[in-house]
Length: 408
Image (cartoon, rainbow, N blue to C red; front, side):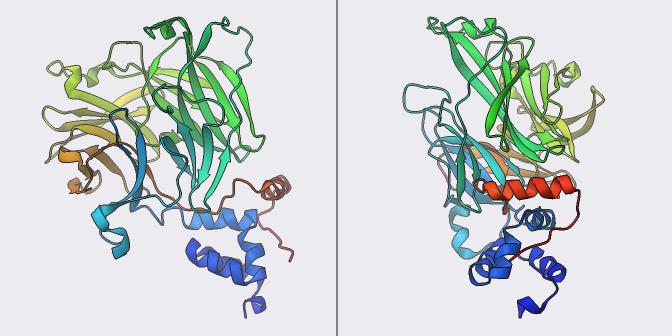
């Protein structure tokens, strides 16, 4: 029956189906199998279904005093199957190895990095970074990071920490990871020598399966681990601080463009700080709002938060909101196609605020742990371990065609 349909019509029909249905067709029909695995169809289905699972997030819950992480799926409404609503959360069926922090999604792909292993607090090293597609249950271990730059630090200097981002280079259609790595003197037991060594920026290319050193930043900043996905318009963003005393006072944004490899250091608006507030009652993060990067500042003593937008390196306050419930943590969030801000509330609950409806509600996640980071759950057919897919995709892209002819 399917074979009687014109190929272009069959592709249109299949692109409207959820991935679960596509898997069933793929296993019983050869024509559907060839269509579904093609780069053209994967791209078309991704564009059609970009917001299909936007009622679900992957939330990282801190489960031990050593801040070890467990990722769980949390639904933000009640329109889900009964089997998935027990305590309003469930552990992911397919996850990276234990204690990985996840960044994404970019076209349904995520980057995972192990923060530390055991009691030694050894920061990410060889074999502890991966790309992950939860839909296909595929993992790709990234090669070790080897920094080759003109002025290498002395032999007693070791890696100390790293921040990361993940996104798509729209020029080459290549998925890329960006790392910002710090150093310290291995003989420094107090871990304060990292301030003497500028941070290094590296970029990983999925197509080339290799790391590339870009350059160093102007100094060693304290960078905030992003609590939500902050990739927009080919660039990834981090909050940075010149202050080395915790809690940090952030005064700069680091921007790395994955397409051009340009790096910017942009100042933050001083007027966002209220004189009456201490650092302990003030927290902030970056998030995406209306397809642009914004700074969200939460004033915990009066449950207010402000949103600042960045345009042409200049900041302006866009919103000032009074919450009707207590929020102790600021998680950010990017909810497609709507716009939400997610907070940590009392008793480890989550508080979701709708910026368009100007309403908030509590998500009663029944756990004894608190949530540290969140990302949208998104399904896709983009493979990680299919070299033939990428070869065909390159041919398709270089030919500049808008269609993809399938051979059975």
